[in-house]
Image (cartoon, rainbow, N blue to C red; front, side):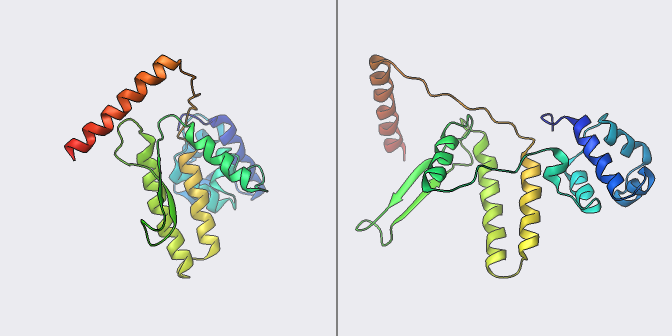
Length: 201
């Protein structure tokens, strides 16, 4: 988890420990680590794994995202435009690619639209992470809908998931304006690739 400032993570662990009136030995015993390991966590000398962060959050009455310093606050969603703007931002993430599937009558019984991420897309390595997340999310949502999972447990899963993926950095790919000639060339290449896919399928 290279993206975190572990001295800042350590400072938050120390502050939470003191707030709970625990010494380092007591905290070490509660999470099954040595005193020296806890000392290194608090000074930022060593990386704190996501599993340990989850244990610390439970023992220190906090959240994994707070301990890691990941800001879960988002701009309030007040209109449909906010939702659409978020989708436009997803489109700019380098390493993530999706297709938009639209089914509507009379070609389909229902009007359905979906974003589809191909998990084995070699050109888009983050797609596999997205597919794993969406599969897990649907399982959690089903558990919640069927009352097998409490709202608190669902929120805990959200926190742990955010903490896990907070260590996966992404870069935004700024779209480039192409010249007319380059755009036509790429358009022809694209149409040719579609034709070849149709032949091989």
